[in-house]
Image 1: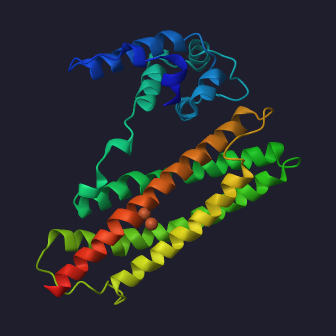
Image 2: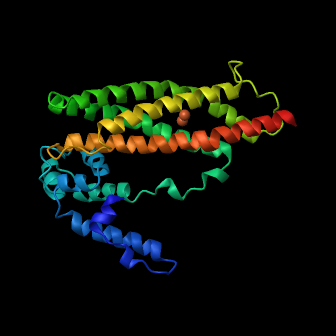
Length: 274
Ligand SMILES: [Fe+2]
Ligand SMILES: [Fe+2]
């Protein structure tokens, strides 16, 4: 969470009491709220791109009018600044998934998690990122040909993902939920289309590799999501959103490739051998 590092040095405040986590959070929120009011919207977005989405949801321009503070912008927009602060805090303090022990989760729970978190994130972010990339291409595309290539690669990746998610949600995940919850079903080796489920899973894994190749190219063209110094906030946020999408997609594919799919195939084989 980049806000913590920039605005608050929490390490020196950490104690050992059972309440330290709560204190840490309260301290962070107090500190954050005191400091944030003196920063401009564009400075806040530079520290954590997720703030851009919050400002956008309140109709606040973080690009051309980014010099305003939250109170100035909310006065102009006739919005309660407290609401904006609360939303910002909610976004920057949201938990990360690094602490979850996915390997020991029931497969049906893991399938639900992937669908509710990662698939939903893809569906939510795709139209937004396409819009940001389109704007960045319109403004900078003539002198930065790579931007058009990045936009085209993102389009390819997400068109393919749309079909990929459907295959998982309509065929593979329901199958996984069935084998993990019903120990007596032994006739589930075949999916609804009479294609062995392991073959379908193999096909999905190949698609993951194709996605990885596209994103490797995007990383190269964006110089690992580093916009040039002259980039406007829209350009910067487009790259930051792409990076967030890339990180989430990598985690998503890791959960399927290394945990969900191999465990499902092993469980299915076990059930058919018994
Ligand atoms: Fe998936
Ligand atoms: Fe997948």
